[in-house]
Image (cartoon, rainbow over all chains, first blue to last red; front, side, top):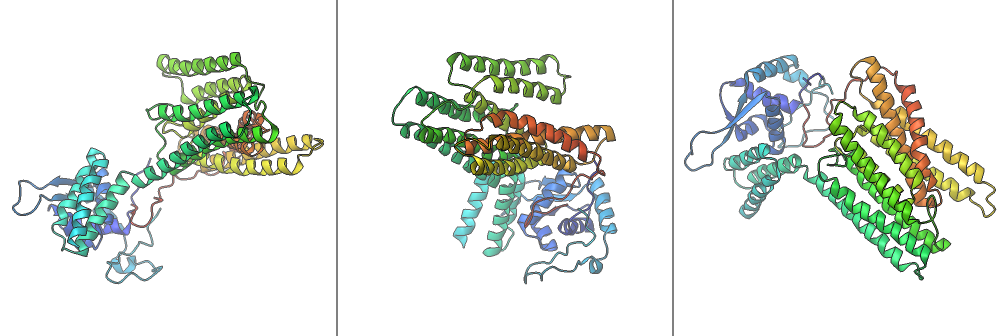
Length: 119
Length: 380
């Protein structure tokens, strides 16, 4: 069975955030701020990316003072190639914006859905 | 707001235990990150997202709906037992006979799903909504059968419903046959593991047909319940699309046939041949329709010959399901058509195989990759 390669716009946003500093570990809230995604959307994406071994995850070393340990994420070697290819295959952000079916809600980060996104 | 945030964090911690071990760390991650999120609504929203992750990961909503459905079926079964004891004024031989049938049916309804909790032929239930819906609706249909028997007691005054009056030797033969059939399946699987599932299912279907032809209503109820559980289990060879197509076409055919019986049934029985013709044609046609749908919906993977065989097999299974559903619905509403519960699956399977063969040559259809989830669900 062939693997699916078409990513949703939200997933592409996460990949784009991770690909900017591929060797750095990022934490969830950081990714949420960059992508504008809510935790209920971001974490299912991270879970699936981790299941597909595009993203690797680990807990922060040691016990930081004054806050709990963070769960950290970064692209795997294969994941970096996959993400780079997926982002390169998508049109530029301006062209990426599909005709909106409805206006994005104010205050919510509007992530355009790709017109070319296949099923 | 602090109180709400605290409650959400507590709920998140408790809910994480519902998840499999490999998923719990993701919920813990959300909790840990919550410390970074600005207090107030943003943090509450963050934690609520974690709860959503838990609900999704543990399939909580699906389980809740499923157990509500099972609870409703259990309540209906209890209602049927209550009816059978409170609607027949005299405990004569025929009434006792029907009470025994109702009790055996309810017993099977309790016992078989309990057996189905273990991994095996009957369980656990398939992951799809279709499988869960068909399982709950099928059990409800069997409850309806008990209610139909009780209704006949009230309106006709009791009597044998099925192939003959109550007979203890025949009951024992039925139980022995059922036990031998199930044991034989286990032995075959243990001794000859190379035997394909399809062949085993064929043997099971033949054994079931013999049991159905020999034994009275109790046997029908037990075989139907076993078939419902087996067809909706995780290991079932019946594809979701076939199950759905069989259930929908069977429901439509059963209701149409019940309406026909209701309209044409007269005191002098002059329309009986016409009724029989309508029942047979409707069942075959619904089976064929289910077969076409199942064959069409079978994704186009594998070699052409194998694909054709797989599509015809799914067509046959969908047709059998359609005929069984039609027979069950018709009996639930008509009560005099118990024979259709035996004949229906056979006719439906024949129609389904024909329909499956007719649609087996359609262009290959790629496996659907779209997620059915919506809203916060995200597709790759």
